[in-house]
Amino acid sequence: MYKYIIRPLLFLVDPEKVHYFTFAVLKAIHKIPGVAAILRMCFQVTDKKLERTVFGLTFKNPVGLAAGFDKNAVLYNELANFGFGFIEIGTVTPEAQAGNPKKRLFRLQDDQGIINRMGFNNEGIATAIANLKGNKKQLLIGGNLGKNTSTSPDKYTDDYCAVFTALHPYVDYFVLNVSCPNVGSHAKLNDVAYLIELIAAVQGLNAKEAVQRPILLKIAPDLNEQQLDEIIQLVTDTGLDGVIASNTSVNRSNLKASEALLSSIGNGGVSGQPTKERSTKVIQYLSDKSNQSFPIIGVGGIHSAADALEKLEAGATLVQVFTGFIYEGPALVKRINKAILKNS
Picture 1 (spheres, helix red, strand yellow):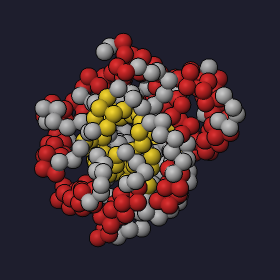
Picture 2 (tube, one colour):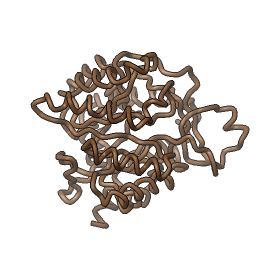
Picture 3 (cartoon, rainbow, N blue to C red):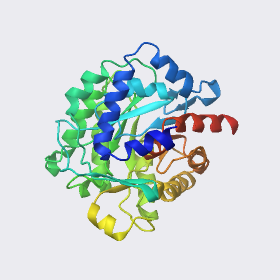
Picture 4 (tube, rainbow, N blue to C red):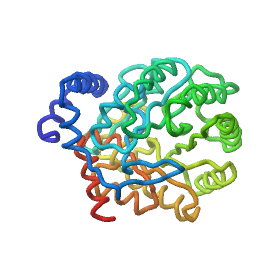
């Protein structure tokens, strides 16, 4: 029903407006007694065989929702009813910011993809914390950290540390988002020397806490083999808990969308099916070259159970969906979990 009735109607409207409309609808229907239970019955797959213990955390299943969907931790309790094993909120920055000018979110329907240049739009730490205080503990929550666009390069670390410290009591793991192509002055974030400095600062704060949270790094799908070797070495040297592979891509080769359409859209990161092959290759490379020495969360172009299994077979320990969730609907999560059970 989703693909043939609901999605065509939603796709008639501007994607960013649809996003917030969907949030409002899901909030509203969850106020109806019994709806949450019905959704859990329809979409959740409960089986001990799906459980995964990764970087010291036990996930009830290996399928998560990637950052960027529930930026401000508004809907994670409701989204939990759709069968996810974990949800990553954010990207959260210290202060609220509007992000890039609209229009900034575009569908590539022929490619089953999305181009976005949102620019870390979010309501800041205070709002995220206020919303996370309502956590019903149905699943694990990750916190995706970023910097404010207006922050000068010498203060980048301060931004990440501020969000880390504030969110620490409320999330189960952290992700340093240093690979988003949609924020200004992000070149420094791709510099290995700076990453060592950033990771050390956050790890230092983590060590002072009574409970240490796992810290992961989210990387781009466009890195070459030399850069991926540097990531492997970075993880080894710093003791990072894992890697998320991968973020959106700036590569627009082999898209079905016309040059005219792409030109009219302008800059932004590509997600969805166009990133599937490249993200899987990154996962495979990291896994093989590191001898599976650290966990990898695989994300990029997962629109089917087969796509998810491909990521897991390539070396991912967990997977995340985003664009596939939009194109395929909530039943995608159930299909993936059932396929994992069948192949276990």
